Length: 224
Image (cartoon, rainbow, N blue to C red; front, side, top):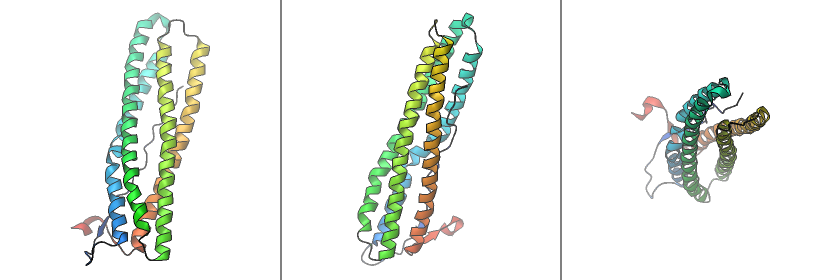
């Protein structure tokens, strides 16, 4: 049996605050807030890929199960289903690359928050901001690992469906490729879990930073 990811990636938490409108312009803390929330907006495309990716994996899984259930007497059907599965794998790759570009944009914007930290006067708050940055950088690193692992999985999924179209495919070849794919997806799931854990830590740390900075976090109907 071939493994899949079938997991959501945790998204960044968007937060509203009451800006004070201080004379002399925004504080460094408010500048950081603006940057961090723009980062959330830039990851909207990333967020939008999650459900389609899961649905594509499930659709592909059904095709895979159909292919496995067929004998070589139904070779033409196997080829047709394999081509259909390959199209889905290509769609998954497109969604993954959309995800990657969204994260890349967010990473570039996040650098503005890093620059603003130097202007924070309060030592403890500055340290908290630096810890927040470290978490986000760890998050970006964990996503890079996830992207690399999932890209490897997709490439090997393509090889599998091309393999299915070989009339002289041996059971040994098939089992070898499926085992390889399953090993890769174990890495994908592990990278996925790490990314989710770090994202949760970052979301929590961001709320704490806003509160420590004296920024009034607005919840729900308080926005009205």
